[in-house]
Amino acid sequence: IQLGPGRLLKLQRDSTVPYVAMTFQQGGGNALLTPAQQGLAELTARTLTDGYGSMDAQQVEQWFSERAASLSASAGLQTFSVSITGPARFTRDYFRQLDSMLRTPHFSQKDMERQVQNMLAALVRRQDNPQALLFSRVRQFLFPGHCYGFDSLGTPDQLRHITRKDVQDFW
Image (cartoon, rainbow, N blue to C red):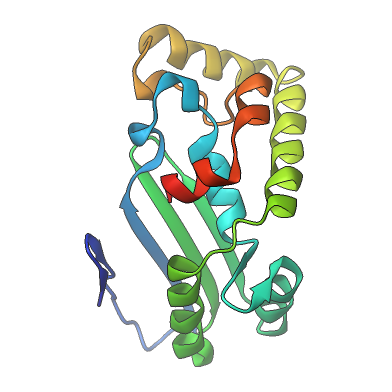
């Protein structure tokens, strides 16, 4: 299914399973960032699912909850992904939700501020997890100045300076 320029969705059906798992993936993530923009891809992923079309974050959460389904988005080193899982009988509805999310995300200031606070808290928690702290430092050491060495959470200073326009332009 062609979803727009550079956005192709491939489906593989298995009618023996009454559950569906869909993942939309496109090029993106940290590979599109400069060193000063670290954290932007992750913030975009986190706020993408917080409201789109005519629904705010609570309505999105309720819609998926009522269908025993889940929605998530993530930014990787070179990709940006959105995943939906749930009962197969709602597959057409999932496609409508995915279409609305990809075309009309809100990226509201309120949701962005909440997600920035969540990311700042994750940075603090990481300080208490030696393995996570080491992993974040190793990438920076192995790939200095390259997107593979970027911290997906960014730094507190970088996060505080990301604007709604930055997120919209990145998307």
